[in-house]
Length: 307
Image (cartoon, rainbow, N blue to C red; front, side):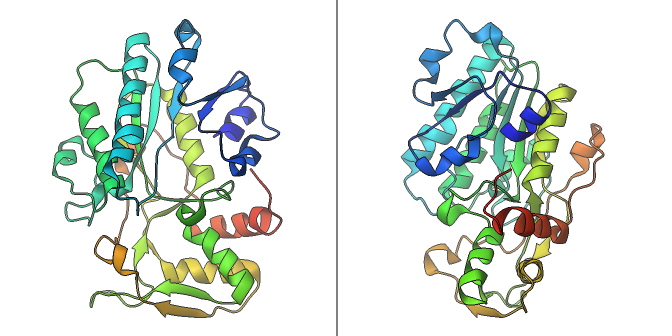
């Protein structure tokens, strides 16, 4: 997002995060910004500066889907986000925040971003519940920023995720695994209606994500919660074959049991319904999975480059 804003001539940017991890530094090295502020110091820092803020993009969250300590999510994903919302409401600051496709759980109620469905959703883990809890809280507020958008990110992949560890995209992990072993291990299906490797996700390239966010920053109307995927579910087999092809290697896939600690909460299918964001005027095509993988592997992972 920082790169995109720099490319669009935004220079007076304030970065708010937990900067204690050295692995994150490369993400903002060489970019142009005004200053960095630790997330815990932000509330003191912003006092008296509220009228200088043009917009806020709130992407920060604990995203570990295997974390079971609900208090962590309550603090970072719900309470902190509520503070951001109240600040933007009070000072009329446009706000875009990250929700998640994890809110849809098993997909029993489909993947439509209609507000009235939010209270019916049953996420499969504490992370997803925290995101849905905040979405529901937002929809119940009478005070709101004059423009706001909550974006339900589906499976985002692309440059600058070197620091994410286990929570990195499947494409990132596939590249590393193939580089070391010349093969890729995928989770075996534990359902009769899905063949091994045919579990499907809606994979969206991070460059498309930032393009949508930038569009909304300029659009500034039609507030609401929106899906952000491509609208096309693709299998893990398709994804893995794409990585092999981009690396110039023959596809060799092995299937292993899904770990028991996530087996009961594993999503077999996600596909964003994208009509809502198209209806408000977003018309750009989304990058195909094959084209996104090829760009990511050849221009970033292969040479350890950042966007």
